[in-house]
Image 1 (cartoon, rainbow, N blue to C red):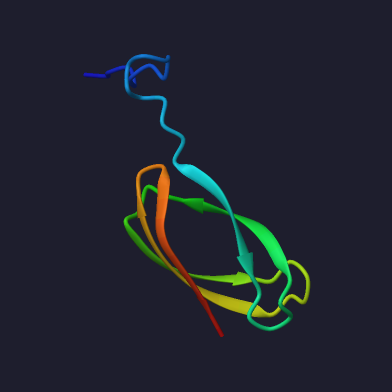
Image 2 (image 1 turned 30 degrees about the horizontal axis):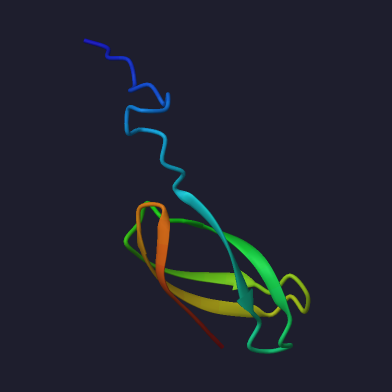
Length: 75
């Protein structure tokens, strides 16, 4: 049996945006740039290249749906 996905209309509790935009500082060049984080996963470890110097940055992220709780940038 097929079921229709819940509507994302306002007032029904399904309209939460799980993609959150945030800014990080590159540990190599010190420049600040924006990234988008999918907050549907409570804990993540990602590698993101700096938008300025292109070096890899290790990100450790803790989230709750719709919000970033902690974000750590390292080499």
